[in-house]
Image (spheres, helix red, strand yellow):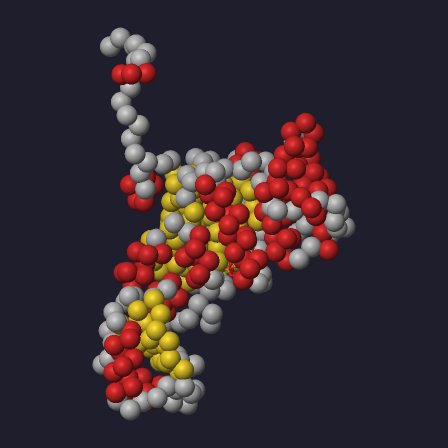
Length: 333
Ligand SMILES: Nc1ncnc2c1ncn2[C@@H]1O[C@H](COP(=O)(O)OP(=O)(O)OP(=O)(O)O)[C@@H](O)[C@H]1O
């Protein structure tokens, strides 16, 4: 077949960008974990988990404290050896090709480990020098990162003068100094107030728009819903479910939930009385949850039975409800 360069006029039209699962299927897989295991002595922290992350995806590990999320992240980051299974980061084994793999990764650890003694700009510059990045690259890069982290006006401040949200943004800026293709974020917004969390989510959205693959752990279901295209729900080292937040909610919960509080000593007894009102009723120590398609109708039926909760709320189902259904426990337990 002869190779000719087609004229611009004869080129087929650009295909429309594809979204969702179809688009993800076309992108190369940048992280592949197969039956990944981590044991500490007799204790199994990660118990045979498998997942794939395509390039550009925002992928979450959602689970309660101790589920094995950070341990999994440390294995991906090449700082913890696995006990079993296979792991590939951009086709490479992080245990065999650590430095090459780490050059593609940005890592935001659970605890900020900034140099508190140094000024904000110097934290970025010195970190970049650890990477051996040349001064001519670093100088403009650092200013760009300060701008990205909305810290340009704090460039000469000392780190210990920054708020928690600013420190977190600086840690993220620092992790981007080598222009990583994959960013690993362990509990990115834990401990921050709601406004600081929203600012941070906005920065992470921007990275995703630039094509950076995000892998994050969280035990905040709102964070998972906001940030993740797809996630795995992890508990006791195992994957309980996998999908987009919307898919998981559709699969494991109803459209709406009614939350009722009757007082700690009455919740369980009342739950028995209204067990027939929804698709499912859960009695938690502090509230009763009724899962149903139409929450308002359920609430009316509760009141019609002469029951008067101290507080009542109708809301949409969330990943918290998915977790409760899968494990019988609340994420906050
Ligand atoms: N170095 C270690 N030695 C022994 N046990 C460990 C070690 N590191 C973690 N573990 C245990 O492994 C389990 C999983 O810990 P991991 O930090 O991965 O959980 P996590 O899901 O990230 O929770 P968190 O949100 O609290 O960090 C926990 O029971 C933890 O105590």
